[in-house]
Image 1 (cartoon, rainbow, N blue to C red):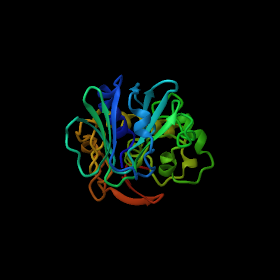
Image 2: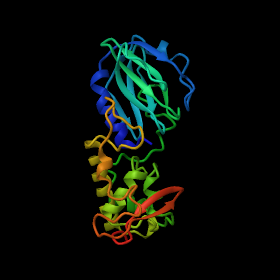
Image 3: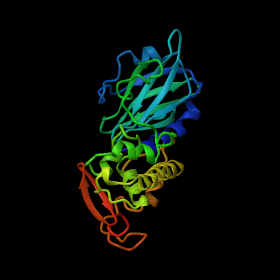
Length: 275
């Protein structure tokens, strides 16, 4: 599933081809996504100009500048979706469901075999959307730190890994990156969130920032069919320390990595390094 680094990588990849461009055509080949594509999407978009792309959690926000009201396309990649830049005339693939064509001849093309993603239309900047209002801070915001995690974790019996993956606590710490951050901080993913000290939460917050920044720098994590805006795979998977390496030796201490299930998600950790 595309996570925050993959969405950020996509945003950075497609933005230079879209920002400031006029939309000349919208093609909807398959409207039945997780949220049905609005029937009037072409009517709303054609003739409008694209503003500066932003991201909130795993939602890509594409501002649409038109008179009299500004609006936002809220795009989510679901489990298997990707956004690529194509050229007018490029033959679409089987699961290419939506095209947004610009006056420059570039096409924003949405590909999604499972159709769990969506594109939706919101008036204004989209920040009041019900899917966004309850989200926690971005991992690179100043308010996300060890003190924040410590404060919200008090009296929590839930294991620290699902606690960290809760989007109300912080966005972007999906399964891969929570697994890696807990390893970097030396914290057992099974430990109760309320039983972790402030000093250890400071290490964990720093690890979350570090692992996500590294993944973004390297273009996201290659899992199955994720690709960036230019169709290039991510490369962070080459640096994974524990995720997907169950049964292999820990790269730090040599102990055999163990696989467990927490919150219905697979988790791998080192019994020697993570306490």
